[in-house]
Image 1 (cartoon, one colour):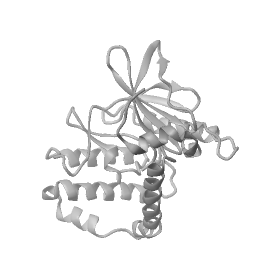
Image 2: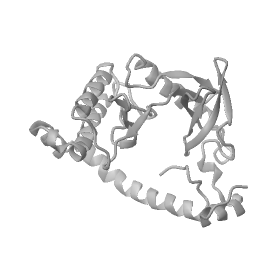
Image 3: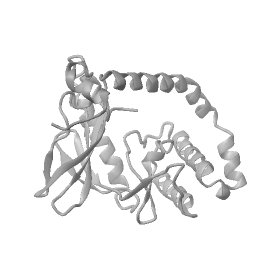
Length: 259
């Protein structure tokens, strides 16, 4: 048995019945220890995230090649079947990856696991962070990548999360997690504008020296829809963060759950 000095970990071990398993995509189950694709066995290295919608983990094959498994929801919710949602979101996200499969900045799909899981390449690199420096042309390359995605009548939608924008060891920007991306004509232009707005926010924080006057104007003046979104959802996210922090401390939410 692994020893721990974390009182919350000890408390959780003694009170497993208190965990709110309905908040986990796989319920009481965890990510598989192994899976096989194209005759190659991959073993779990680290479980990264397990929230209401999906569970994500890092795996490696015998040669040390690392991949990412993302499994959509299979657990029931208050007795109602929810695997249909996990399957739908899995197919939907795979569709976005496949539309961009020729781009070196997007991880390649390797295969599927079960009805709700898919596997893609692992990107060697690090996410955007205030403590990390980025190359001079990083944001220009990001803009070019977004322009190509938009040209394909898509919107990424998640550029507000710096952890989804990676500076690869190859020096290129990479995007991961297309769970909420969009390719319907309705609201498409709005989401595309939001993609650029949020990327410029990161540029303002990390490379303000490269920000042009036009970009500064664009990131300073928010659109009506962005202001409306913030007004409506800021209280929700504030309460959500406080609630999840409390649930973790009480042992009801596992450490790898949603933030």
